[in-house]
Length: 244
Image 1: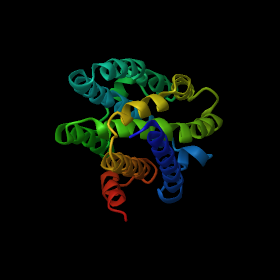
Image 2 (image 1 turned 90 degrees about the vertical axis):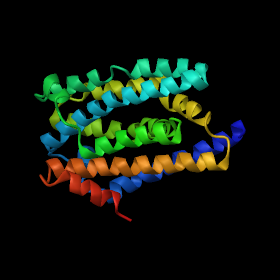
Image 3 (image 1 turned 180 degrees about the horizontal axis):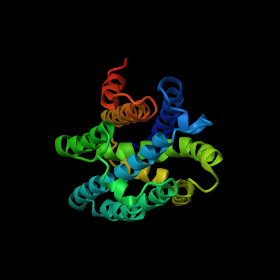
């Protein structure tokens, strides 16, 4: 594929992501809790940030496997992904500081069992590496997260700080600022496009992004049911993933 074709594909994917965010707010129960609630459920907020930290921690292992793949197939990309991974490596500490401000210790964070939807996402990455033989699923997810975070996090952080107090999400804001300054979205896209040469490759990227979006919705469904509704979160995940 030519550079122009990649640019056109990027426009298609970015539009798909915008539509996904709109659908997320429209269809997922409690999706706008951090965005619009004026009485934020503290258990919801705490567990949300805990899961972000656990996901960042587990993603480091996936990134290590991605680097291992690149060392065998493309040493230049191995070096670039090493730099990206180094940049992201300790970002969980930014989120941990925000949790300390609401009474959650680091010991509590790292002793927490990840939610079902978090385990499913991690398993999806491993499946891609082991059975597809390349890190296309995790790279597609990285592009999804880099973009969707920029579409959602600023509004969520603003509302959290209005409700819980100024500076209470300072670490999360620093993370957003850092990603913007380093232009992570374009970097991840360029790496992802090294795997896209045919229409079938394009189809696979869209399929992975769609599956990651489903797991994204399942996560927020589980989170809302587990904390706000105090119901079976795992059962809610199954319902979310089987919804037409």
